[in-house]
Image 1 (cartoon, rainbow, N blue to C red):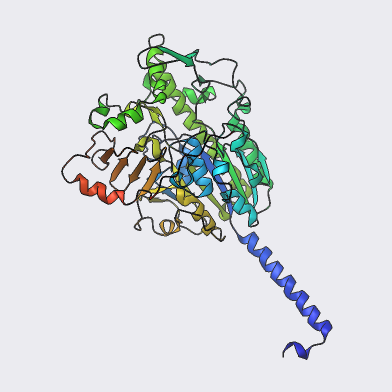
Image 2 (image 1 turned 135 degrees about the vertical axis):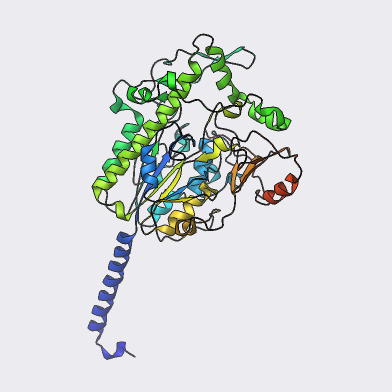
Length: 485
Protein backbone atom coordinates (compact mmCIF):
# COMPACT_ATOMS: atom_id res chain seq x y z
CA UNK A 1 0.00 0.00 0.00
CA UNK A 2 2.81 2.37 0.97
CA UNK A 3 4.67 1.68 -2.29
CA UNK A 4 1.61 2.65 -4.33
CA UNK A 5 1.92 6.26 -3.10
CA UNK A 6 5.13 6.69 -5.12
CA UNK A 7 5.95 6.52 -8.80
CA UNK A 8 8.07 3.62 -10.14
CA UNK A 9 11.07 5.93 -10.47
CA UNK A 10 10.81 7.02 -6.83
CA UNK A 11 10.38 3.42 -5.74
CA UNK A 12 13.59 2.56 -7.64
CA UNK A 13 15.46 5.39 -5.92
CA UNK A 14 14.22 4.22 -2.50
CA UNK A 15 15.36 0.68 -3.29
CA UNK A 16 18.81 1.89 -4.36
CA UNK A 17 19.18 3.99 -1.22
CA UNK A 18 18.13 1.04 0.94
CA UNK A 19 20.66 -1.22 -0.77
CA UNK A 20 23.43 1.32 -0.29
CA UNK A 21 22.44 1.72 3.37
CA UNK A 22 22.50 -2.03 4.01
CA UNK A 23 25.82 -2.42 2.19
CA UNK A 24 27.32 0.46 4.15
CA UNK A 25 26.04 -1.01 7.43
CA UNK A 26 27.53 -4.38 6.59
CA UNK A 27 30.82 -2.75 5.67
CA UNK A 28 30.80 -0.72 8.88
CA UNK A 29 30.10 -3.88 10.87
CA UNK A 30 33.12 -5.57 9.30
CA UNK A 31 35.34 -2.66 10.17
CA UNK A 32 34.05 -2.62 13.76
CA UNK A 33 35.04 -6.23 14.28
CA UNK A 34 38.24 -6.64 16.28
CA UNK A 35 41.51 -7.70 14.74
CA UNK A 36 43.11 -10.95 15.89
CA UNK A 37 46.80 -11.45 16.64
CA UNK A 38 47.19 -15.22 16.99
CA UNK A 39 50.54 -16.18 18.54
CA UNK A 40 51.58 -19.84 18.71
CA UNK A 41 54.75 -20.87 20.55
CA UNK A 42 56.37 -24.26 20.11
CA UNK A 43 57.27 -26.52 23.08
CA UNK A 44 57.10 -23.91 25.85
CA UNK A 45 56.45 -25.38 29.28
CA UNK A 46 55.45 -23.81 32.60
CA UNK A 47 58.95 -23.26 34.02
CA UNK A 48 58.75 -19.55 33.21
CA UNK A 49 58.31 -16.40 35.25
CA UNK A 50 54.81 -16.10 33.76
CA UNK A 51 53.69 -18.86 36.14
CA UNK A 52 55.90 -17.89 39.07
CA UNK A 53 58.32 -14.94 39.36
CA UNK A 54 60.73 -17.30 41.12
CA UNK A 55 60.94 -19.61 38.11
CA UNK A 56 64.26 -19.51 36.25
CA UNK A 57 63.16 -18.91 32.64
CA UNK A 58 62.80 -15.18 32.09
CA UNK A 59 59.67 -14.25 30.13
CA UNK A 60 58.99 -10.56 30.81
CA UNK A 61 56.95 -10.09 27.66
CA UNK A 62 54.61 -12.95 28.47
CA UNK A 63 54.13 -11.33 31.86
CA UNK A 64 53.56 -7.99 30.16
CA UNK A 65 50.95 -9.54 27.88
CA UNK A 66 49.19 -11.20 30.81
CA UNK A 67 48.69 -7.81 32.49
CA UNK A 68 46.59 -6.77 29.49
CA UNK A 69 44.11 -9.61 29.61
CA UNK A 70 43.36 -12.97 31.20
CA UNK A 71 46.07 -15.51 31.98
CA UNK A 72 44.81 -19.07 32.31
CA UNK A 73 47.25 -20.40 34.85
CA UNK A 74 45.92 -23.92 34.34
CA UNK A 75 45.85 -23.95 30.57
CA UNK A 76 46.38 -27.29 28.84
CA UNK A 77 47.03 -28.52 25.33
CA UNK A 78 44.72 -30.98 23.59
CA UNK A 79 47.57 -33.36 22.82
CA UNK A 80 51.28 -33.34 23.83
CA UNK A 81 52.59 -33.52 20.25
CA UNK A 82 52.90 -30.85 17.57
CA UNK A 83 50.74 -32.20 14.76
CA UNK A 84 47.76 -33.50 16.75
CA UNK A 85 47.77 -30.42 18.96
CA UNK A 86 47.80 -27.96 16.07
CA UNK A 87 45.26 -29.95 14.05
CA UNK A 88 42.97 -29.92 17.06
CA UNK A 89 43.34 -26.19 17.73
CA UNK A 90 42.87 -25.20 14.10
CA UNK A 91 39.90 -27.50 13.52
CA UNK A 92 38.18 -27.19 16.88
CA UNK A 93 37.92 -31.00 17.11
CA UNK A 94 39.54 -33.41 19.56
CA UNK A 95 42.15 -36.03 18.60
CA UNK A 96 39.78 -38.70 19.88
CA UNK A 97 37.23 -37.49 17.30
CA UNK A 98 39.45 -36.78 14.30
CA UNK A 99 41.98 -39.63 14.65
CA UNK A 100 45.01 -37.33 14.32
CA UNK A 101 47.23 -38.80 17.03
CA UNK A 102 50.78 -38.58 15.71
CA UNK A 103 53.21 -36.14 14.14
CA UNK A 104 52.96 -37.97 10.82
CA UNK A 105 49.14 -38.26 10.76
CA UNK A 106 47.53 -36.83 7.63
CA UNK A 107 45.37 -34.20 9.29
CA UNK A 108 44.32 -32.59 6.03
CA UNK A 109 42.67 -35.79 4.84
CA UNK A 110 41.11 -36.41 8.24
CA UNK A 111 39.63 -32.91 8.38
CA UNK A 112 39.01 -32.21 4.70
CA UNK A 113 35.35 -31.29 5.33
CA UNK A 114 36.06 -29.11 8.35
CA UNK A 115 36.64 -25.34 7.97
CA UNK A 116 39.82 -24.58 9.87
CA UNK A 117 39.99 -21.49 12.05
CA UNK A 118 41.80 -19.04 9.70
CA UNK A 119 39.65 -20.18 6.75
CA UNK A 120 36.52 -19.43 8.76
CA UNK A 121 37.78 -15.91 9.43
CA UNK A 122 38.75 -15.47 5.79
CA UNK A 123 35.30 -16.60 4.68
CA UNK A 124 33.72 -14.01 6.96
CA UNK A 125 35.51 -10.90 5.75
CA UNK A 126 38.88 -11.00 7.51
CA UNK A 127 42.23 -10.53 5.84
CA UNK A 128 44.24 -13.53 6.97
CA UNK A 129 48.02 -13.82 7.21
CA UNK A 130 50.46 -16.46 8.44
CA UNK A 131 54.16 -16.64 9.15
CA UNK A 132 56.18 -19.18 11.08
CA UNK A 133 55.04 -22.54 12.40
CA UNK A 134 51.25 -22.59 12.38
CA UNK A 135 50.81 -26.10 11.02
CA UNK A 136 53.15 -28.99 11.72
CA UNK A 137 56.40 -28.67 9.80
CA UNK A 138 57.15 -32.22 8.64
CA UNK A 139 56.41 -31.48 5.00
CA UNK A 140 54.25 -29.61 2.47
CA UNK A 141 51.36 -32.05 2.99
CA UNK A 142 50.76 -30.59 6.45
CA UNK A 143 50.23 -26.98 5.40
CA UNK A 144 46.95 -25.33 4.42
CA UNK A 145 48.16 -21.99 3.20
CA UNK A 146 45.04 -21.53 1.09
CA UNK A 147 43.36 -20.44 4.32
CA UNK A 148 45.41 -17.25 4.23
CA UNK A 149 45.41 -14.30 1.88
CA UNK A 150 49.18 -14.12 2.27
CA UNK A 151 51.70 -16.38 3.98
CA UNK A 152 55.41 -16.60 4.60
CA UNK A 153 55.81 -20.34 4.35
CA UNK A 154 57.56 -22.17 7.14
CA UNK A 155 60.27 -24.59 5.97
CA UNK A 156 59.75 -28.32 6.30
CA UNK A 157 62.07 -30.42 8.47
CA UNK A 158 63.81 -31.74 5.37
CA UNK A 159 65.14 -30.59 3.04
CA UNK A 160 64.11 -26.98 3.52
CA UNK A 161 64.86 -26.23 7.17
CA UNK A 162 67.99 -24.05 7.40
CA UNK A 163 70.59 -25.92 9.46
CA UNK A 164 74.37 -25.88 9.91
CA UNK A 165 76.27 -28.50 7.91
CA UNK A 166 76.88 -30.61 11.02
CA UNK A 167 75.49 -30.65 14.55
CA UNK A 168 77.19 -27.98 16.63
CA UNK A 169 77.39 -30.26 19.68
CA UNK A 170 79.29 -32.91 17.73
CA UNK A 171 76.88 -35.77 18.50
CA UNK A 172 76.38 -38.17 15.60
CA UNK A 173 74.37 -41.22 16.75
CA UNK A 174 71.65 -42.10 19.24
CA UNK A 175 72.66 -44.19 22.22
CA UNK A 176 70.20 -46.71 23.63
CA UNK A 177 69.37 -47.38 27.30
CA UNK A 178 71.99 -50.11 27.48
CA UNK A 179 74.69 -47.99 25.86
CA UNK A 180 74.36 -49.52 22.41
CA UNK A 181 74.80 -47.12 19.45
CA UNK A 182 71.71 -46.46 17.38
CA UNK A 183 70.81 -44.72 14.15
CA UNK A 184 72.20 -41.40 13.00
CA UNK A 185 71.12 -38.73 15.44
CA UNK A 186 68.36 -36.25 14.68
CA UNK A 187 69.54 -32.88 13.41
CA UNK A 188 67.14 -31.44 15.98
CA UNK A 189 69.24 -32.81 18.85
CA UNK A 190 71.55 -29.82 18.89
CA UNK A 191 72.19 -26.48 20.57
CA UNK A 192 74.42 -23.46 20.20
CA UNK A 193 74.78 -20.11 18.44
CA UNK A 194 73.46 -20.25 14.89
CA UNK A 195 73.13 -18.59 12.39
CA UNK A 196 76.06 -16.22 12.68
CA UNK A 197 73.91 -13.20 11.88
CA UNK A 198 70.98 -13.27 14.32
CA UNK A 199 68.88 -11.33 11.84
CA UNK A 200 68.75 -14.53 9.81
CA UNK A 201 67.27 -16.53 12.66
CA UNK A 202 64.06 -18.17 11.54
CA UNK A 203 62.00 -16.56 14.31
CA UNK A 204 63.38 -13.11 13.57
CA UNK A 205 62.25 -13.47 9.96
CA UNK A 206 58.86 -14.83 11.00
CA UNK A 207 58.16 -11.93 13.34
CA UNK A 208 59.58 -9.28 11.00
CA UNK A 209 57.09 -10.38 8.33
CA UNK A 210 54.21 -10.28 10.83
CA UNK A 211 55.24 -6.81 12.00
CA UNK A 212 54.92 -5.55 8.44
CA UNK A 213 51.39 -6.94 8.24
CA UNK A 214 50.43 -5.36 11.57
CA UNK A 215 51.70 -2.04 10.28
CA UNK A 216 50.21 -2.11 6.79
CA UNK A 217 47.14 -4.37 6.74
CA UNK A 218 43.60 -3.01 6.61
CA UNK A 219 41.24 -4.31 9.25
CA UNK A 220 39.82 -6.51 10.30
CA UNK A 221 42.87 -8.79 10.13
CA UNK A 222 43.75 -12.23 11.45
CA UNK A 223 47.53 -12.48 11.77
CA UNK A 224 48.85 -15.90 12.79
CA UNK A 225 52.46 -15.95 13.94
CA UNK A 226 54.19 -19.18 14.90
CA UNK A 227 57.36 -18.82 16.98
CA UNK A 228 59.53 -21.93 16.61
CA UNK A 229 61.73 -21.68 19.70
CA UNK A 230 62.06 -23.27 22.20
CA UNK A 231 61.63 -26.25 19.86
CA UNK A 232 64.88 -28.13 19.28
CA UNK A 233 67.47 -27.48 17.93
CA UNK A 234 68.20 -24.82 20.53
CA UNK A 235 69.81 -22.27 18.20
CA UNK A 236 69.85 -18.78 19.70
CA UNK A 237 72.03 -15.66 19.70
CA UNK A 238 74.87 -15.72 22.24
CA UNK A 239 73.31 -13.05 24.42
CA UNK A 240 70.49 -15.41 25.41
CA UNK A 241 72.85 -18.21 26.37
CA UNK A 242 74.76 -15.67 28.46
CA UNK A 243 71.61 -15.08 30.50
CA UNK A 244 71.85 -18.65 31.83
CA UNK A 245 75.46 -19.31 32.98
CA UNK A 246 76.21 -23.01 33.34
CA UNK A 247 77.72 -22.61 36.81
CA UNK A 248 74.50 -21.13 38.21
CA UNK A 249 72.00 -22.87 35.94
CA UNK A 250 68.69 -23.84 37.56
CA UNK A 251 68.05 -27.57 37.26
CA UNK A 252 64.67 -29.31 37.15
CA UNK A 253 63.47 -31.22 40.18
CA UNK A 254 63.81 -34.92 39.48
CA UNK A 255 62.86 -37.99 41.52
CA UNK A 256 65.01 -40.94 40.47
CA UNK A 257 62.55 -43.67 41.49
CA UNK A 258 59.58 -41.87 39.98
CA UNK A 259 58.31 -44.95 38.14
CA UNK A 260 58.19 -47.22 41.20
CA UNK A 261 54.50 -46.64 41.85
CA UNK A 262 53.06 -46.53 38.33
CA UNK A 263 51.56 -49.49 36.44
CA UNK A 264 53.59 -51.47 33.91
CA UNK A 265 51.57 -50.07 31.01
CA UNK A 266 52.48 -46.55 32.06
CA UNK A 267 56.18 -47.44 32.39
CA UNK A 268 56.18 -48.98 28.92
CA UNK A 269 54.39 -45.90 27.57
CA UNK A 270 57.13 -43.66 28.97
CA UNK A 271 60.09 -45.79 27.88
CA UNK A 272 59.44 -45.90 24.17
CA UNK A 273 61.97 -44.69 21.55
CA UNK A 274 61.92 -41.07 22.72
CA UNK A 275 63.78 -42.27 25.83
CA UNK A 276 66.87 -42.09 23.63
CA UNK A 277 67.11 -38.33 24.27
CA UNK A 278 68.10 -38.91 27.89
CA UNK A 279 70.12 -42.07 27.30
CA UNK A 280 72.14 -40.27 24.62
CA UNK A 281 72.84 -37.35 26.96
CA UNK A 282 73.86 -39.76 29.72
CA UNK A 283 76.31 -41.45 27.36
CA UNK A 284 77.70 -38.18 25.98
CA UNK A 285 78.19 -36.91 29.54
CA UNK A 286 81.12 -39.32 29.81
CA UNK A 287 82.84 -37.25 27.13
CA UNK A 288 81.47 -33.89 28.24
CA UNK A 289 80.15 -33.78 31.83
CA UNK A 290 78.24 -30.59 30.99
CA UNK A 291 76.14 -32.20 28.24
CA UNK A 292 72.88 -32.21 30.19
CA UNK A 293 73.43 -28.69 31.49
CA UNK A 294 74.17 -27.38 28.00
CA UNK A 295 70.93 -28.88 26.70
CA UNK A 296 69.02 -27.29 29.58
CA UNK A 297 70.78 -23.99 28.98
CA UNK A 298 69.75 -24.18 25.34
CA UNK A 299 66.10 -24.71 26.24
CA UNK A 300 66.02 -21.89 28.77
CA UNK A 301 67.77 -19.48 26.43
CA UNK A 302 65.45 -20.47 23.58
CA UNK A 303 62.37 -19.83 25.69
CA UNK A 304 63.59 -16.34 26.54
CA UNK A 305 64.41 -15.73 22.88
CA UNK A 306 60.82 -16.70 22.04
CA UNK A 307 59.61 -14.26 24.70
CA UNK A 308 61.69 -11.54 23.02
CA UNK A 309 59.82 -12.20 19.76
CA UNK A 310 56.51 -11.81 21.57
CA UNK A 311 57.72 -8.45 22.82
CA UNK A 312 58.52 -7.35 19.27
CA UNK A 313 54.96 -8.19 18.19
CA UNK A 314 53.46 -6.26 21.10
CA UNK A 315 55.65 -3.24 20.39
CA UNK A 316 54.59 -3.29 16.73
CA UNK A 317 50.92 -3.51 17.65
CA UNK A 318 51.26 -0.60 20.09
CA UNK A 319 53.03 1.51 17.46
CA UNK A 320 50.24 0.78 14.98
CA UNK A 321 47.63 2.32 17.27
CA UNK A 322 45.40 -0.75 16.87
CA UNK A 323 45.95 -2.37 20.25
CA UNK A 324 42.57 -1.20 21.58
CA UNK A 325 40.69 -3.03 18.85
CA UNK A 326 42.84 -6.17 18.65
CA UNK A 327 42.30 -9.50 20.33
CA UNK A 328 45.59 -11.20 21.23
CA UNK A 329 45.73 -14.91 21.93
CA UNK A 330 48.95 -16.60 22.93
CA UNK A 331 49.31 -20.34 23.40
CA UNK A 332 51.89 -23.10 23.24
CA UNK A 333 51.12 -26.28 21.35
CA UNK A 334 52.23 -28.36 24.39
CA UNK A 335 54.63 -28.40 27.31
CA UNK A 336 58.01 -30.06 27.64
CA UNK A 337 59.84 -32.43 29.98
CA UNK A 338 63.47 -31.61 30.78
CA UNK A 339 64.27 -34.78 32.70
CA UNK A 340 61.29 -34.79 35.05
CA UNK A 341 59.51 -38.16 35.16
CA UNK A 342 62.73 -39.61 33.64
CA UNK A 343 61.67 -38.05 30.36
CA UNK A 344 62.88 -35.52 27.81
CA UNK A 345 60.66 -33.74 25.30
CA UNK A 346 56.86 -34.22 24.98
CA UNK A 347 54.72 -37.33 24.20
CA UNK A 348 53.45 -37.99 27.74
CA UNK A 349 50.31 -37.30 29.77
CA UNK A 350 51.78 -35.65 32.87
CA UNK A 351 51.41 -32.01 33.77
CA UNK A 352 54.83 -30.92 32.54
CA UNK A 353 54.09 -32.02 28.97
CA UNK A 354 50.60 -30.59 28.86
CA UNK A 355 50.64 -27.41 30.98
CA UNK A 356 51.07 -24.41 28.69
CA UNK A 357 51.16 -20.59 28.56
CA UNK A 358 47.63 -19.51 27.57
CA UNK A 359 46.63 -15.83 27.47
CA UNK A 360 43.67 -14.02 25.92
CA UNK A 361 43.54 -10.24 25.63
CA UNK A 362 40.21 -8.91 24.36
CA UNK A 363 38.78 -5.40 24.15
CA UNK A 364 36.15 -4.70 26.78
CA UNK A 365 37.32 -7.23 29.36
CA UNK A 366 39.13 -6.48 32.60
CA UNK A 367 42.93 -6.58 32.25
CA UNK A 368 45.30 -8.34 34.60
CA UNK A 369 43.01 -11.25 35.43
CA UNK A 370 44.16 -14.76 36.37
CA UNK A 371 41.82 -17.72 36.02
CA UNK A 372 42.85 -20.88 37.84
CA UNK A 373 40.17 -23.00 36.19
CA UNK A 374 41.60 -25.85 34.09
CA UNK A 375 40.92 -25.01 30.44
CA UNK A 376 42.20 -26.45 27.19
CA UNK A 377 42.96 -25.31 23.67
CA UNK A 378 39.82 -27.02 22.36
CA UNK A 379 38.02 -23.87 23.52
CA UNK A 380 40.10 -21.41 21.48
CA UNK A 381 38.19 -21.66 18.17
CA UNK A 382 34.71 -21.07 19.71
CA UNK A 383 36.10 -18.28 21.90
CA UNK A 384 37.48 -16.34 18.94
CA UNK A 385 34.39 -16.63 16.77
CA UNK A 386 32.20 -15.42 19.63
CA UNK A 387 34.48 -12.51 20.53
CA UNK A 388 34.58 -11.44 16.88
CA UNK A 389 30.83 -11.73 16.36
CA UNK A 390 31.08 -14.51 13.77
CA UNK A 391 28.68 -17.42 13.48
CA UNK A 392 30.05 -20.60 15.01
CA UNK A 393 30.44 -23.62 12.74
CA UNK A 394 28.44 -26.64 13.89
CA UNK A 395 31.37 -29.02 14.26
CA UNK A 396 33.11 -27.31 17.20
CA UNK A 397 33.65 -29.48 20.27
CA UNK A 398 34.87 -26.82 22.68
CA UNK A 399 33.13 -24.09 24.63
CA UNK A 400 33.76 -20.36 24.40
CA UNK A 401 35.88 -19.05 27.26
CA UNK A 402 34.02 -15.74 27.27
CA UNK A 403 32.34 -16.52 30.64
CA UNK A 404 35.81 -16.87 32.20
CA UNK A 405 36.89 -13.57 30.66
CA UNK A 406 33.89 -12.02 32.40
CA UNK A 407 34.36 -13.91 35.66
CA UNK A 408 37.62 -15.89 36.01
CA UNK A 409 36.20 -17.93 38.91
CA UNK A 410 33.03 -19.20 37.25
CA UNK A 411 32.56 -22.99 37.43
CA UNK A 412 34.18 -24.87 34.56
CA UNK A 413 34.51 -28.47 33.42
CA UNK A 414 37.88 -30.31 33.65
CA UNK A 415 40.40 -30.25 30.80
CA UNK A 416 40.94 -33.32 28.60
CA UNK A 417 44.27 -34.30 26.99
CA UNK A 418 44.89 -37.19 24.59
CA UNK A 419 48.03 -38.81 23.27
CA UNK A 420 47.67 -41.65 20.79
CA UNK A 421 44.52 -43.74 20.59
CA UNK A 422 42.84 -44.48 23.91
CA UNK A 423 45.30 -42.69 26.22
CA UNK A 424 43.80 -39.74 28.06
CA UNK A 425 44.38 -37.42 31.00
CA UNK A 426 41.77 -35.37 32.85
CA UNK A 427 42.79 -32.30 34.86
CA UNK A 428 40.36 -30.94 37.44
CA UNK A 429 41.01 -28.13 39.92
CA UNK A 430 42.81 -30.56 42.21
CA UNK A 431 43.53 -33.87 40.47
CA UNK A 432 45.18 -35.32 37.37
CA UNK A 433 43.68 -38.64 36.31
CA UNK A 434 45.36 -40.70 33.57
CA UNK A 435 43.89 -43.74 31.89
CA UNK A 436 45.76 -45.70 29.25
CA UNK A 437 44.34 -47.68 26.35
CA UNK A 438 44.89 -50.97 28.19
CA UNK A 439 43.02 -49.75 31.27
CA UNK A 440 45.94 -48.82 33.57
CA UNK A 441 45.31 -45.76 35.72
CA UNK A 442 47.18 -43.07 37.60
CA UNK A 443 45.86 -40.40 39.94
CA UNK A 444 47.73 -37.41 41.38
CA UNK A 445 46.64 -34.94 44.02
CA UNK A 446 48.31 -31.87 42.52
CA UNK A 447 47.36 -29.72 45.49
CA UNK A 448 49.58 -31.78 47.81
CA UNK A 449 51.86 -33.29 45.17
CA UNK A 450 52.52 -30.69 42.44
CA UNK A 451 55.40 -32.74 40.98
CA UNK A 452 53.13 -35.76 40.50
CA UNK A 453 55.49 -38.08 42.36
CA UNK A 454 52.89 -40.07 44.32
CA UNK A 455 50.43 -42.11 42.29
CA UNK A 456 47.43 -42.53 44.61
CA UNK A 457 45.27 -44.59 42.23
CA UNK A 458 45.24 -47.47 44.72
CA UNK A 459 44.79 -45.36 47.86
CA UNK A 460 41.57 -45.57 49.90
CA UNK A 461 38.92 -43.26 48.47
CA UNK A 462 40.64 -42.81 45.11
CA UNK A 463 38.28 -45.10 43.21
CA UNK A 464 35.40 -42.68 43.77
CA UNK A 465 37.51 -39.75 42.54
CA UNK A 466 38.62 -41.63 39.42
CA UNK A 467 35.08 -42.77 38.63
CA UNK A 468 33.90 -39.17 38.85
CA UNK A 469 36.70 -37.90 36.62
CA UNK A 470 36.27 -40.72 34.10
CA UNK A 471 32.92 -39.20 33.15
CA UNK A 472 34.91 -36.60 31.21
CA UNK A 473 36.70 -39.19 29.06
CA UNK A 474 35.64 -39.21 25.39
CA UNK A 475 32.86 -41.61 24.41
CA UNK A 476 34.79 -42.85 21.38
CA UNK A 477 38.41 -43.15 20.28
CA UNK A 478 38.61 -42.62 16.53
CA UNK A 479 40.76 -44.94 14.48
CA UNK A 480 44.24 -43.48 13.82
CA UNK A 481 44.62 -41.55 10.59
CA UNK A 482 47.46 -42.77 8.36
CA UNK A 483 50.64 -40.90 7.61
CA UNK A 484 50.72 -37.90 5.30
CA UNK A 485 52.29 -38.57 1.92
